[in-house]
Length: 574
Image 1: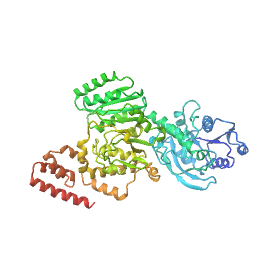
Image 2 (image 1 turned 90 degrees about the vertical axis):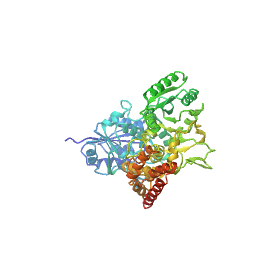
Image 3 (image 1 turned 180 degrees about the vertical axis):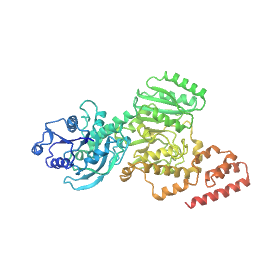
Image 4 (image 1 turned 90 degrees about the horizontal axis):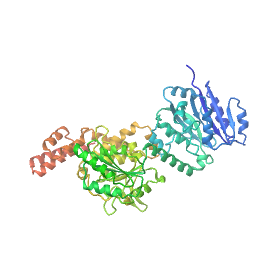
């Protein structure tokens, strides 16, 4: 079988102190088919004399328009099957290329670890280049979100598939983050999931190299790249979406639409998401929304039909249907202020790209999700486990909700558990490295309490809700390689072993469909069957106790007390 040919592209400028090591590390590969292309920017420090000493090199030295332009020239000259890109102050370990060629036979891109060194080549730490998703790449504020560039190899066709135009593989308008832009384009087609557990390269970092010297400008450019790709992912047609779930046409819904009509912005949409179960009512709601859409002067009003079910399932459907980077979730009857969208968009401005969700509260109420300090209002992470509320309204970044797949139920059961859904969303936002903030100026006055029934049961189910969330998240973390990177740099949630172990033991005492006991509330026969099937499940006993109390059934009350005591004793041993 013919050996795959490597094209190694190196751009350089005034790196005479380092480039010899780069060149000789390629020569030490002992691989039969390698071309090494050096694109020099017109160095005057002795680099040219070094290049002339190696007749196998394909090189040029002339002024260019920057690193991206130089790399484009190098990639355009490459004739190999495999592309390698290494800068003139980095180098490879010997004998690497044979293993890389084998890895690329059945997948077009492969990564290895990268040892970071100081200016003098003294090794400092290893970047493991864990497997990652497109969303992991997008979150530039998470350390090591962008993989170490010299430790990535890919087949030539990958570069051709994602190029902007003939000969333009990198965006020449990007000074620092041309590689991040490239990886995001590649990851849309090929996930970065092939990794070898060995060092692929050594990378020098020091105060006077370009990125180290201008980190402030680097982060600004990363933000630009983030906005570019996030907007493409959500197919942004407008600046802001307002999502309102409904099961019927009502005066409350009409009031919400009327407030949306007064929004002066000309780049907004409202989605009425129908999750009702009555076909005739669905037809009526669709007709009414379409009629109202003709009266919206500046923006777009849309009807979206979701499958009949709980509001959270409808919202998951809506997240995929919106066509804007920011969305507001509100309830029928809630009214938007004319400046609502402008206020939200200011909160999610470019310098705050890590923010995934904002919740507005009433500062006069005792709201346990938010913590007020001298520096302002912050989101309390621990409140996810203890707060007595389910957030009815919030503002979120669409690309973050798409990463989460919207609202989830238990990892072991189908459907969305309304008791867990909002809390699990908040927990997974933080787990994935995004941020949550509270801001009372973004509060929508509530017309109704859509989750009143669920909130009344939160104290009953609290222990199981929390345990289920912990169990699900721990399982997810074990399946996600990049969790290790976020964990090391504290951009995630990590549960202590004793907490996760206790949660798992608790959930082993109840059926996988434990949340379905909600459907039996008030039905003695069904609850009797539940306590027989799951005698250690306290909520089933408590709901049966409601019936005993309402009917003043002392015999049943005594049995409930005995059953609850036994279940509580069992939990105490976990």
